[in-house]
Image (cartoon, one colour):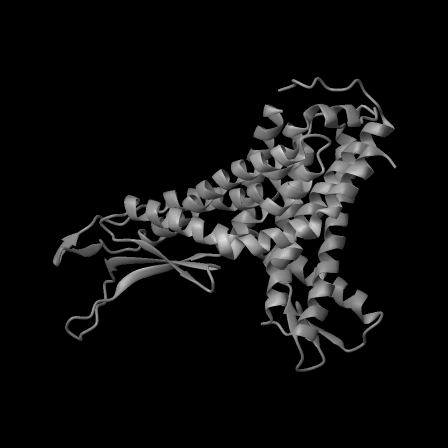
Length: 209
Length: 173
């Protein structure tokens, strides 16, 4: 069997175990850790808006809650209506992990080390990309037409005028790219970079041990 | 390598941004209609109980229904495959054209297999079942990504074997 076929066979053997491991770790470790990190970044970045993330459906749905007041307020005293938005499904950003595990575990040498290193790199990318997604949601919210007011220490304050549309447009395009790059581009790139010599020799038609 | 990544990133960003523009919605909807029709035509060969109304495939008149929407088109991953092909420097342009056609066709074959499997899984398990959600939202996108990557590697490998050139330097940028 040619080396490429052998490589695909090895990777194929890891397909279901990698996916199962990813699914199991998603709700137990990955999403809760990512939620804590991203929530902290959000609170630091949008402190005056008192923004925070809310997790629903076992962490598979993130929503963004703020203390920014909507233009229309309830007539009932003591009640306020604030802006909130749906961030989306964070699990989609982690779909590159099982692919990376498959590809790196089929490496000709030092499989475990390469897999662990690729996992760390991917996790770093996932944190950045999710940060973009959360910020995208916040900027989309802040492009609403009226100036924003917020209660800070029981005082009503004017936060700032609405943001222009272009930051959320650019973040939206970057977000689309990163979802797919993390899902397939980065795992493929890491598989190539970590086994560069092997891939070059394979494409040159030489069999390697 | 750096040039490949730069061209790939620019093409991918541009294409994915364009696919979100309302201008292309009618074309994408037409593509989804075509995809739904092809899926129905294949399924009809062995199951006469599937009906097709616009882009909605349904079991009987009140059974589980699957609508082929923009998210089911496979166009984003097809565009990424095309971007990688265009950015790859060691392939002649006429080979790239052939590889683009063959590769996108194969990706859509996998996509149609996905639609057929989801049509029956949804019918047997129900659309709200956790296994259906797992397979629909996570496993099949994972398989589609993997398929596109495998098709890209195999096409490059076959082209290399068919017309061997001197091996690229391992430190090529």
